[in-house]
Amino acid sequence: MAKQQPLRILHCFRSPVGGIFRHVRDLVEEHSKAGHEIGILCDSSTGGEYEDSLFDDIRPYLSLGLTRVPIRRSISPSDIATMWDTYKKIKSLRPDVLHGHGAKGGVLARLAGSALRVNRYRVARLYTAHGGSLHYSRSSLSGQFVLRMERLQEYFTDALVFICEYERDIYARKVGKPRTKTRLIYNGIGERDFEPIPTRSDAVHFIYVGMLRDLKGPDLFVDAFAKTERLLGRPLSALMIGDGPDRDRYREMMVERGLGKRIGMLPAMRVHEAFSMAQNLVVPSRAEAMPYIVLEGLGAGKTIIASRVGGIPEVLGADSAALVEPGNSDDLARVMAETLSTPDWHARTMPKPEAVKAVFSSAVMARDVLKLYQELVNPAAGQVLPVAS
Image (cartoon, rainbow, N blue to C red; front, side, top):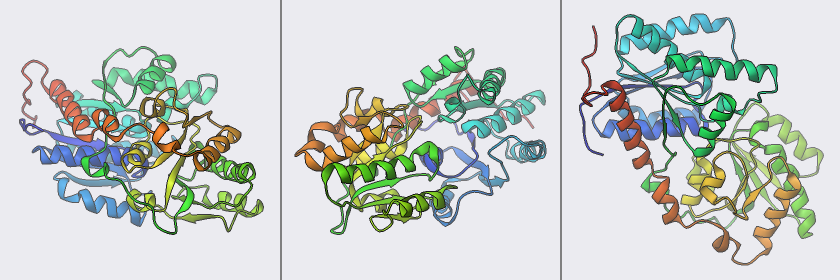
């Protein structure tokens, strides 16, 4: 990535877990190596030892530091105090760019950035939804409120970044045609992620890797696993790897169905370690934007079985036999059974790694995001304006 006049870039998001955290970590590393000063502001109450180790990985790239404040998932009166505290911390960092990720990160970045603008401080305000509020339905009262808030916040937004065509299209359908600058920039993974990971000798048949909450479909995975056993007429093995608020409920579900000894549960870990435990990766989400787990699985040479949601068809192919109807455990079980019973299913179904790499590269993602930052900071000359005192 060619070096440009250094920018001071601050990424704001709520929870340091999952795809948003992966996305930000990649941008932090790429942009820091290009000579820019980077910081992160996120929630202090979520994440554990695994996430702490990921922060340790990128700490050398965070010249603006890691700032953590309490940020609740839902809207509450405490948000007022959080906003004031956040504004003071952001102001002290004197950023050129505020990039909000996810609904709460987007609110914090855009409101704080707008407050700085009132004080004649030039700062670019960007927002990437990463699914988030776009999963709400327009037919519900809560959905109408959230989506109207998204529309209102466009007045405080210099650019919307969409991570896949699906997200861009669903935003236009649910929120409305954007009234500010937009850019489609696909999520991407790095060169080191495009290395096949062999399975261990004690590998299981299927793994689920991700947050343990209903939106991601762990319950569908358990249900489909039992149905796959019945379709094939033999016992199978699986692992659910991750953490989340509904972990105990899924464990009880497995025990009640007599699957407790055939489906194991492990805490969140680095995906390279998780991928060594099986060849077949199941992504049974009810909703997604552009999940990194699919890109990482393909880069590692894994067989992906995934719901037809979000941007997943843009990666696997719109007509891929690996796609199943969302929320349908019968369809999921059918494809899971096919992967084990059909010779060369992987070779005939999965996209080639070179085709994935050509589109979903973290280097390309970071380059295009940085180009947008530069356009926003000074659209006339492409140079960074002096930071106001």
